[in-house]
Image (cartoon, rainbow, N blue to C red; front, side, top):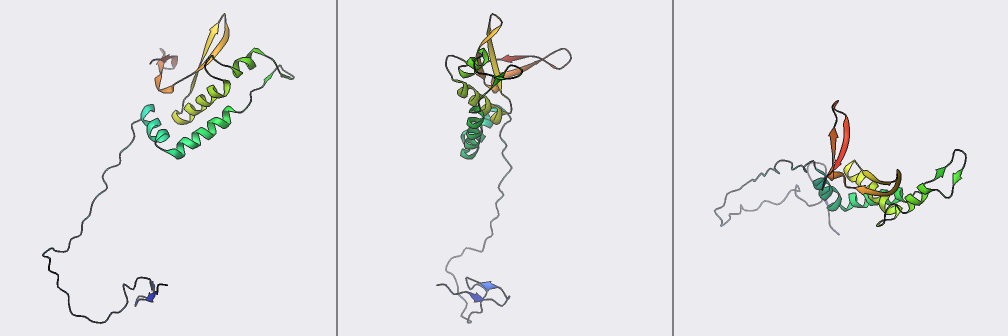
Length: 165
């Protein structure tokens, strides 16, 4: 068990640095080096560029806590069931229910919405593309937000969205 000594300053001194020590002869060192105090600045802050790829790489791929938080929220939100009602009651069969269960040929409903919510949380924007056939929506796809550009109209308000790979 280590002993702690009280220094002359009235505080506990666990290492005995301020305790009175017996007088000893001055020591001389054989080295010719002089005392040195080195100060080093940490430099300027390095900010992540403000584009989706950089933010996703730094905040989502390299940060396990952010990754886990986004994934947990996206999974929970995607697992919430959708309901279709017809004014007074809940419908068990409807084309929208079928579309939300199987939005496209490659993904299930929860997979599409998990990606949608993940993009929303990581990028702040999320987009769905509705594929129409004969005026009916037949498929839904999630679009990457970093590939979406807003095309402004004559008044300055968004006129259209352009998706480019």
